[in-house]
Amino acid sequence: MVSIVIDRTAARAHEGHNHRHEHVSASARNGSSEPLTMPPVSVNGVSISRKDIAAETQNFPAVNPGAAWYAATRALVIRQLLMQGASRLGMTAEPQRDADGRVETEEDALLRALVEREVETPKADDEMLARFYENNRKRFVTPPLYEADHILIAARREDGATFGEARERAASLAAVLAEQPERFAALARDCSDCPSREVGGSLGQISPGETTPEFEAALAGLTPGEISAPVETRYGVHLIRLVRRIEGRRLPFEAVRDRIARYLEEHVQFCFITPIFLCC
Image (cartoon, rainbow, N blue to C red; front, side, top):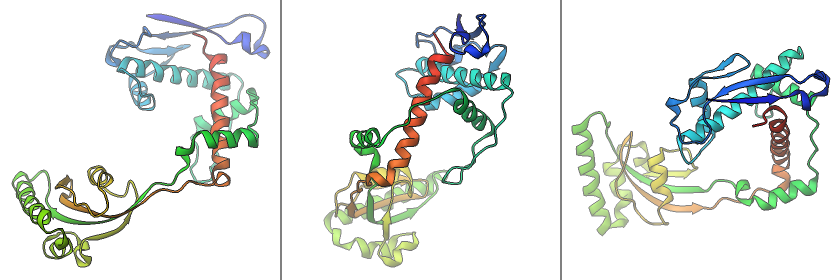
């Protein structure tokens, strides 16, 4: 066990001149331990559950589970310290709604109010925003669009026999199409179990996320005119033909300027908060 001592008084003069230490119980931080072996964590007597830490690890990809566990624990410790600071100050805050209509939680509202009150962060100017935009071009590109056709042999994975038959039918159709790819639309009309059979299997334009992961992965690997090998999804077995790929376009700076400004402001606030509330 390692006891991390956090002295917030040095950074917060209005809380008095006497040093007050806050003790956070945590496990060894070398990142080598498995998460399930980690002991409980508490911040000034307030426990952070293993369940909460496990959920938070999803936000911290790492080379091993122990490193992810520690990063998640650190983030939750910071959050708990902030909540305790807001409580001592007697703060309250009304949840706000963002531009997309999402309402922040009461905790997030309180943390936002605390940061606005206690942390003075520099505002990014247009030059900084433009530089971030130019240095992160891949972030500001619309997703590609695919025009595709497919043939679906419907079956449920839970029904092993039926799914096996679907595999066999799809394999037979794939063999025919390997020799006669021009028959795709006709075979879709005759054999597909999808309503798209009425239009030769055409699915129109598809964006990433609109189909199953297996279907999308197969589609992304095709070149225009190419027909996939049988692809299994929860709906059955598919044969997919890519008609056209429309590459994503770069979003203009003005369209993403506000988004970049919000991101940089949040990032700077986090960088200011970390050394103030967690010295380890």
